[in-house]
Amino acid sequence: MPNNAHFYEPSRGHGLPHDPFNAIVGPRPIGWISSRNREGQLNLAPYSFFNGFNYTPPIVGFASVGYKDSVRNIEATGEFCWQLATRPLAEPMNQSCAAVGPEVDEFELAGLTPAESQVVGVPHVKEAQVVFECRLTQTLQLQSSAGDRIDTWMVLGEVVGVHIDPTLLEEGVYQTAAARPILRGGGPADYFEISQDQNFKMFRPG
Image (cartoon, one colour):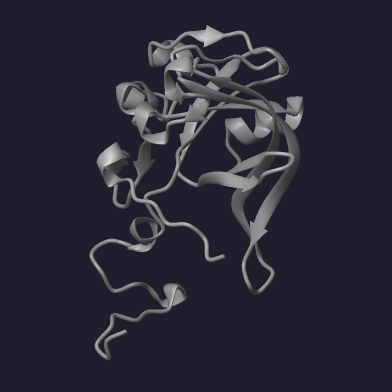
């Protein structure tokens, strides 16, 4: 690290034109989450803090800044779906991010088709090439190092059903780049696409 490295304490401000945190922790998988409330109203929303956290059982999670409809619905029903955001679906995914009321169906807003799931009662995006059907395992309200609760909620779910477009399987092996997944970068508009020419191999030490 050079002696002239830009250093800052986040609690005192970053001193830059734009907060670099999201750009540094990136690109990040997109948590494109479908849910429904007890009355059956559908919700579809992308979250830029998402990842996988366990193999067996497979567990994924996303964080919502603010107690939003997705968190409320999932706590009420215990179910949700995650859909892989890909380059062909980038614009509809972005449309589903619109700040609209809970009565608005983002599937309809984004021109997407809700499809019946196999295990859970929440529909998923029919056009998505990969879908995880999930059951809620935990909801956590995040807190600071001082123990203060903050208005961000982490939702963890066990993957109980997986849909994969067969065109993404080559001799039974899933081809990550073939789906052209998009990832969230920093700033208000930066995204990245994974392509095969970015692939390299590196095996663990013996």
